[in-house]
Length: 384
Ligand SMILES: NC(=O)c1ccc[n+]([C@@H]2O[C@H](COP(=O)([O-])OP(=O)(O)OC[C@H]3O[C@@H](n4cnc5c(N)ncnc54)[C@H](OP(=O)(O)O)[C@@H]3O)[C@@H](O)[C@H]2O)c1
Image (cartoon, rainbow, N blue to C red; front, side, top):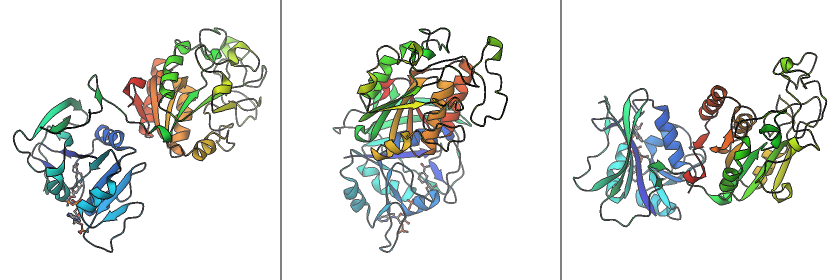
């Protein structure tokens, strides 16, 4: 098992003040989450108490010398050695601090994920000095957020390490296939230039290769489909009506759209290059009722009370991570991603496996999903 330290420190090696982190860097917290999700963590009792709860999606081992100590949702050991032993089936153990634990485990660490602020900070605990020549930097990236900082990966010299998860200078996301599903959201011809009179999204017919590639990292694969009737109160009968509000008492309809993905038509079919529907593990049909026009694939209604069964099925399959792609980024992919995040899944959106209606709304959709906890990859090549 690889023993890694993950730490953020100021220029003067400060890592904490009054039991807390002395700074707030959302992009660094996001990276911490990306690197540690699905992994095993070890931390000192004081660090655990400053976080206040176990971190979701990660196995947490807390060390305390108090034999009575308990931490809900975590495992507790009374020595660091026992904690490492307990973690040992894991491929990599992430030592998450604080200062006391870093000091004791540094001699054991073979890799350090190091965030280093460009600024000195006031504080009361420090990351220990590294001996000259002890580690070499194998990756580094300059970042600017509230303040300038760098993120580096250091590896101990002269040790036989597995290949780091970096390819083309990008950090890769490690996937546990047994717990992962690949979700193709509405990859239908009605959302591509193959059906220009429906809702064509530029490049929508070019995502099959990426959706197939991401599915290679998953145990199960599901697809959602809009299965609309030809006529409904949400159907726009002229170009001027498109995206205008639906009038009348229709709680599950918002705006009007051109007819699209109508059952039995070309627009309803999956884009070329995807498997036959029968070869998916689950096919979700939504929006059949003329009084419903859902976007997310997990509910039939806008109020999200009538399930399509997707969430229940994924939980039954013991899935915790979902690779997401489809059409369109700014509507159904976004709504589906947010629904799955609210249901407690880890969501990884494959940007090469999606296309959006418009640049601005797609960027906003990415920000909305990111704020809700989604992770992003440029393509399935970022998966390991
Ligand atoms: N910047 C960062 O990356 C980062 C990361 C983590 C934490 N921090 C900061 O670091 C500070 C906390 O660090 P800290 O040094 O005060 O505390 P800590 O290392 O989180 O926890 C110390 C506690 O761990 C237990 N412990 C230590 N060595 C042990 C051993 N050999 N066997 C069994 N138990 C052992 C003891 O718990 P008992 O007293 O219960 O015996 C000890 O009091 C906070 O300010 C936090 O925000 C910063």
